[in-house]
Length: 335
Image (cartoon, rainbow, N blue to C red; front, top):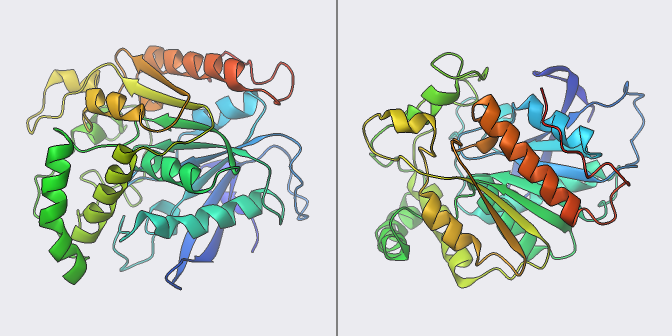
């Protein structure tokens, strides 16, 4: 395995690797790192704390400003394109599909070994967005001692409506997920969130549609059942012991028809439900509600994301014990 220049340019490198899941299946994932110095070819021993970012469903890592923020705060930045997503997609593979969220565990563990230069690193800051936030929370709960802090950007912790909706949906999905896990569900397609972020529409971010299709990947029965099972675990309480930051928009606009409110709210999740469910994650949870934020708060308009970065920096100052003096206190947003 060798690091190569990444699709994001000379500042980034990527490394594709395989990891065997608990079911014995080998799956391909791709680790991306922010490149701090020329690559000598030798394994890098980590001198600074590290952060590992997990993207959302039907997504991949592309936010270079996020990497620069963490770098300026004194962290080595890594992002994982999980199997069946982004850089890890293969022709003919079911984009975004996973039948159990635990199938991601092996590649997260393998990524940490790579980050550690051949050994698992010390406790790492784990960051996740949307479904990646759900995966990150479950990983932190199942691997105590591996995570020092948890940063969740609009994590998908519960279905729209209530736990009653989730339980009803789980009952309907269970037989199909068991018998036909890759069956595609016929659900309304909504590209409104993509419209607000992509420079190919009305947003400002360059997004590769091969890796993040405008209408997202097809929703499959096994995938939805896996997410619902994760939501059920969160509802029962995860008892995560490390500090947790949850960043959310101040409002939601999740209707089937376009509305101008979608330019300044979360057009994917019900943030009120997510905010309430976040309190079940652990013993020390900070919830930041950000006025005008989109579903990914760090893809929001410039002034809004500057507010989000400032809140993240403030939280790091409070919960960055053991970090390099003066670095975790960085408070400036990336340009």
